[in-house]
Image 1 (cartoon, rainbow, N blue to C red):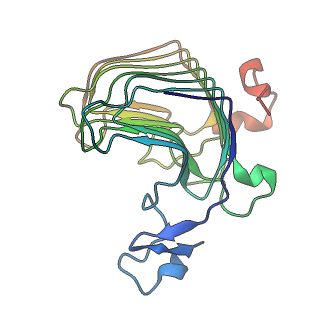
Image 2: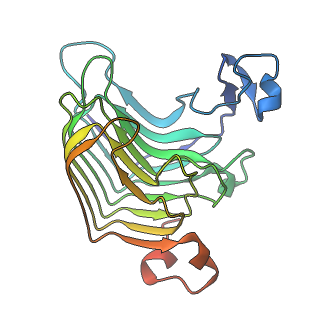
Length: 233
């Protein structure tokens, strides 16, 4: 399956964690529910969403050169249960840069093992993920497995800008995989928790980080290096 060359603008609100039919903008909109939280991972709304739900054949996809506008703690691209797949050359930016109301926070690219089976042989390369610098942002790239067969992950040559995640989330975060390569990524104006291999009791076996560059968030007031100064529009 090929998903290529689309422009996708998502302006959806978020939803209460305990009632996915109730739109919300803040926790106060969910005050009579338990938990009284707005979003925080409850909604899986995505610009592009692929999940292996049923059937004998896992999704094999090529997601390339799409321009996605997203926010309100939703997702740019989801590819759950995908095998032998590539996600490359996509640009994911905050919808609020198009004057769409809401928070500019989102998870850029996410891949998890699905109920039907594990992800393996996944390449995420040459994507641009740009945030607004708002705190408590989602990961730019988050790949999570169960540690029971997820093998062969490459994350390389991605440009990530102004993704201001909290300490519990890394900008690039991987867990529950083996044979992982994270290489030649540029992370611009991000906090210190930039790349994390292994998380939440899900270790990474045979993981390598090579030739990645990070410009800390404190440096964004100065003259940016060339790799951080030119973003696709």
